[in-house]
Length: 493
Image 1 (tube, rainbow, N blue to C red):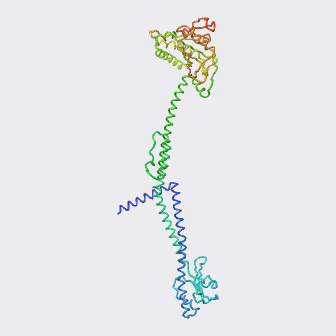
Image 2: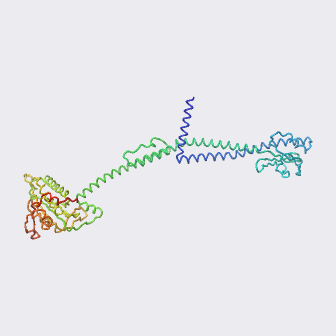
């Protein structure tokens, strides 16, 4: 029995603690306040008429006391007693603490025949035949009752004063007890409402709120969270809301996941496109082309252009299979690309077996001629690593020229960065009129590097389309290699 009482106490304490904790919720406080207020209003609406009835009943009890006086007066008069002595006899017979404080006996014309105690506030001539007059004083401490003349054979009027203070006290106690009962009932119903609301409405809403927060934090995560609302298994409107929320989150999460995958794939493809574009065009030109479409061209007052050509490539193509030929050509030109990147030079293009590279653009640099000459030297060195099908080494002709050019991108498709100008044509002639495995430079290039390298003066040679031109063949550095190499500082394109 003791264990049962303890368990019941713990259960009640747990419910009370949970209910009090639930009041921290604004929605709970609002609902509880309205429930409590509604019950109080209903109880007050019921209590007011009951209070009035109770008050009238208490006053009626006072009137019943004066009825006894009425019967005594009637009996005395009927027995022939002197009417002027009747009230004195009644006063003598009143018990201590009686609620009758006084009385007045009047004739029909309003003349007072006899009176004792406190005088009633009702005038004798105000009492009409057949009508019992009742009146409370303003302070509600006295209650007067006037009995009409028809109760005394139409000869007298009797007015009795009662002490109503006890009625006021009893009604105050009654009101306090009713108010306490209303508060108890309201508190009990409110507590029950809280407990029911906690189980049916508030806790599910709070779980749904927590799930919404959890969903906001996990919507972009790969693994969706486990929602509390999924475990409720309700079949009412809240269950439908929870189910709709879970379905909405799954749909949004799936769409976000698909979008992230699409964005990731787009980034990969964009990176590929970016890399491909920067392999085709210089970085600065690629950035400019992304911002504006149309022709892009810039003039450079002085750059150095190199043309290199594989000697007897046509004969080589008849000795090798096309796939093997392309593979070897790719290895050779990839090696040249690596050299250009190291020296900070800009590869322009390849045409068949010809390779074109330029120094001094798209970003100008003062050592463009020395850098291009260093490129040519390394190209001649690396070409020895490749052999033809008959075991012989590859051979190059290299021509270099310095001068002004216009560089840019034209057209709307298949973009390429190219050079235009007479300096380009002269560089091409330096290569085509050059010597196998030698580097031939023009007079303008010699003016830039002649003081640092040794050259063989070829004098004036006949250049197709240009007539006589003074050219030079590279022989080697005039100073130690370290000094010559120091003159060429790699420049990032």
